[in-house]
Image (cartoon, helix red, strand yellow):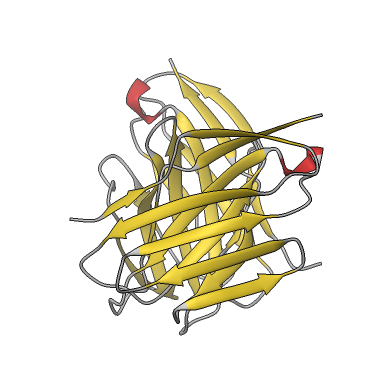
Length: 111
Length: 113
């Protein structure tokens, strides 16, 4: 079976840095996606990692360790608009390119 | 503008009354998929389609049907809706093949009473 774990909820202060962790145990792996989802809205793409290491994109960075089955999303200089859910998703290496989602981490940024 | 559209955005219906949720994309994507999102369960795949006339079951297909007669459209059909199908539904598409990002529609909030 597939198991993807994320913390349910996190809180942080405006201007701070927050790290959202994701651990996975899946029967196949072809990369890991992070999506952002504001309440009641569609998920939007943040990052994709397939090789070990850190990918930086502005205020957001994503890290992957394939050997440990571990990823994190790092958000710097937090803004109020970053209050949202962050979804970790594993791309399976099956022929039909299945994406398996974690349950998401709800981040609340306070002033 | 590149986008995935869904209709309706909100729907309240009664048990057993057939309904269709439409999904359309203008990006010429081969791959399309339907998900449902429930509190504490995350996004779960219902059905997907690799291309026209090619569809297959995802993780939670019971009670749903799909069709893919045209590349741009991928409707979700509930032949006899039940209250346990009350959920937030998302359609998504992506280019095929390759590990590309999926583009999601705005969602359809369905309530079955």
